[in-house]
Every structure is written in structure tokens, then in C-alpha cells.
Image 1 (cartoon, rainbow, N blue to C red):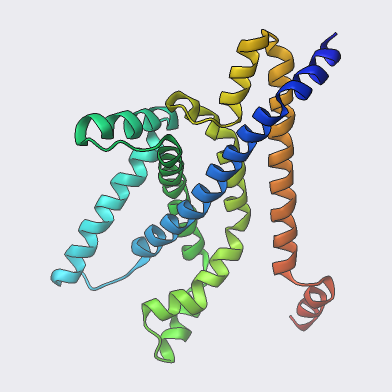
Image 2 (image 1 turned 135 degrees about the vertical axis):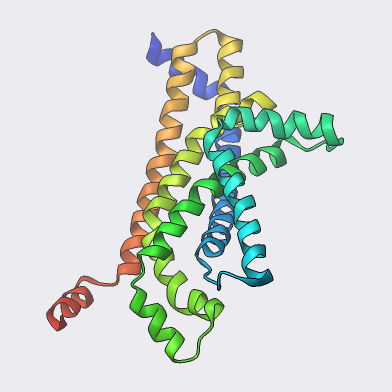
Length: 241
């Protein structure tokens, strides 16, 4: 009977399931990209070194303090609470009437940025100090060193963590249903409320979530392998060492 219900629910509600999956992917992908950019900015700011005196040092220290507060706040509070604060709080406090999709992207982006900041910082710190010294020796400033030497390596090193964050975002967008975002969980809840077949409806949603996360992980794994280069190239590198 459950199989018959599953087939019937898919036949009658496939458009709603696809609509929910579309918004889930849309919010997750855009938010992961924006969050990664935020993370790179904060990671770079946290690793800038200046002399411990003067206006530049204290200005940088103040900026890093604000960025640290942002990171700790968004890492230390649940996303569902952040969604309520952003969507309803901004409207009540400042009169900012934000569309629920925009609010969803903003919340997930800020949350992702807080986690990516520490990932990027760790990636930058992991780069051998000799590369900084060599780049400085040929006259490169901090910005040039970051753009041409450090960040390309960091981007490759943190790709698995970034992919993991994307997969987490695909699943965590379910909490955005509290502000009316019509993602997959919201649509499934509506479908189950209409037919009172909760097991079958959410089983379909479970399969769709798995398809999305599994596909994302396979694509990212393929990108990682492409960035690593062919096996023959890696073998020659090891032989040269």
C-alpha cells in the first residue's frame, strides 16, 4: 500500500516536489558562493600582519574584532533563530520588508560565511611560510601574495570543506520553512497535510534530498580530481621528489 501511495503522490504532486527542490538548490548554491566570498574576506583580514603601532594597526584590530563578533554570533546561534531574527526582526525594528527568498539567501550566506571564515583562515595558515618570504623577496606586497600565491592553493585545499558546506546547506535550508520559504521541506509538509500520508510524502522528500546531496558530492569530487591533474603527472612529480 505504501508503494502505491508513493507512486500516487509523485504523480499528483511532482511539480510541487520539483519546485521545492529548485528553491532548495537555488538558495544553497547562491548562499555557498556568497558565504565562501565572505569567508575569504574574513580569512584574509585575520591573517594580515602590520606593525603593532599606529592607526593602521588599531584600525585593523577593530575591524577584526567586529568580524570575530560576527563569526562567533552566527556560529553560536541556530540558523532557525537567525532566520526569524532577520525576516521578522528587521521588519519590526527597521521597517525592512524583505522577500522570504532574499531573507533565506541572506541568512544561509551569513551562516556559511561564519564557518568558511575559519576554514579559509586555517587554509591560509597551512601555507608554508617560505612561500611568503620568497614572494616578498621579489617585491610582492600582501595583496599580490594573496592573489597570486596563497589563495589559489587555499581554494584547492579547502574545496572538500566547501563541498561539505554546500551539502550541509542543502539539508539545512529545511529550517527556512519557518519564514515561508517554499523549499522542499515546506512543499512536502503541504503535500502531507493534504493527503495525510506523512511517511510516504517525507520518504519521497528524503530520496530527493539524497539525490541532490549525492550529485553535489560527485560533482565536487570530479572537480577535485581535475584540479589534481592526471595520475601520470602526479607520478612524475613524486619521482622528481
